[in-house]
Image 1 (cartoon, one colour):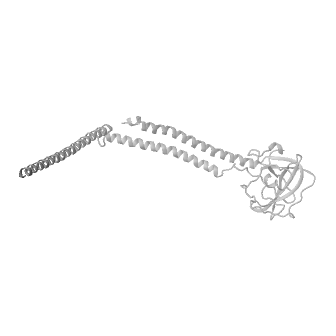
Image 2 (image 1 turned 45 degrees about the vertical axis):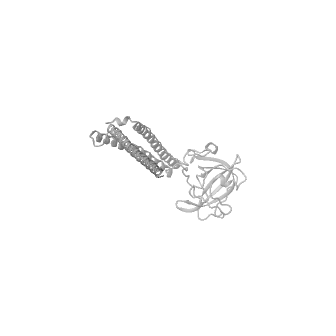
Image 3 (image 1 turned 90 degrees about the horizontal axis):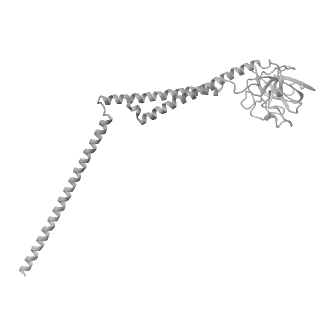
Length: 312
């Protein structure tokens, strides 16, 4: 009954089954692992965000470049204030306001963007406190440069002089004649009525759309594996039912089918021979009749000529 499993067709089907199911399971497990990694990264980022500004401060150069591990770490830098810029349309605790950003020229010559604090209302130079003079040391949570995907950044441009859309070295390169660190610091303690800006979790460490895409791909791969197994079982069941019907004589078996096809071929050949024989007989009869008619015509023609000679 199961001899059909040894046919070349079923060898191919079984080989596809053996290769497809492990592949689908492997891909589904890999996508699930990616989702779990994002969940763990999100938990670690939240923990670092809660602990930001609470650990010992380290020199700025030891924490650069900023990544998911160093983001939120307390950094310290020494230098002199160079200039101050305002970042409008920044919210804090649901209130609209602006950041007060100062550029600290460090001993190495580079400038470090430092968010001195947040103030409510519309950005204006008259409202922002002046920069202190002399050498200062700032301490705060280290943050990665902002980009167009960061919440609160001003993307449209066209800001008045002295205002900035986002905190990044790329946005500052045309405003100052010196190099700027590709990072910034939000200070722990503020003065002059400003509110400290809490550090943010690094981008790409939360449960974003990509994380749930990984979870969706996980389900798809496992569904594919189940579909392959279901189709194999369906084909197998159909072949078994066909074999049972053949044993009961409900459908012709392979031998009977081949025998009946041979009989049909013999019958067809015999019929073709009969037809060809009939065509030959008809052709022979036609030729004989034509020859007889020709002989009769010739004889009558000869008799007529003899009669004409006798009369003469």
